[in-house]
Image 1 (tube, rainbow, N blue to C red):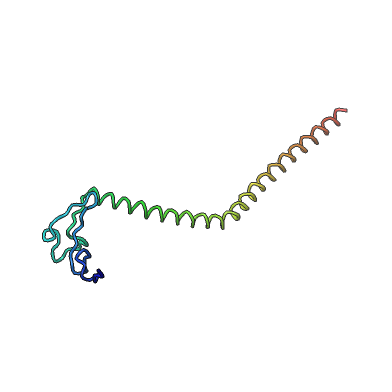
Image 2: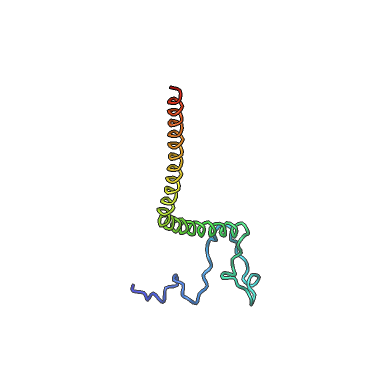
Length: 126
């Protein structure tokens, strides 16, 4: 009962053409003579892809590429922001500090000037 696998008729060999038994949705079989000429760039000339299936395939590829690119961009931006943010925050804090110091200094100066003026006025009345 040991049969040589090379003699089994159920196993296709590389020189045999095997036709698909079921085509994917949106794909229709066509005659290879009609679909492929000598200059044809078709990989599978026996298949005809509907415009809807081609559009869906293109949209799927676009979504996958955008997802990968967006992920890479997000990671790169996070890395660059992490490197730059301490400097930006320090500069912003220094600016706010200088503004607050100037405002407080002006307020104290105005309060002292007013207090001195009131004391001088009160002293002259006596």
